Image (cartoon, rainbow, N blue to C red):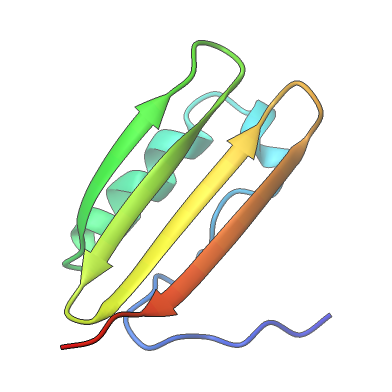
Length: 81
């Protein structure tokens, strides 16, 4: 499946569900977002998963994942100026 690419979103993309099992994948993606100039926050839910919220200009994104059932979602949206 082809995924559209939003300008300014790191092309590495969020970790795939299999990659979230790798040590540090979540933290690496958060570091990539920050390095690309995004204001961001990361919250971990123990060992079960976590969420990254980020904003740059009017573009915002959220990445939420659950390690227990190997699911995740990425939401990107444009906010009014």
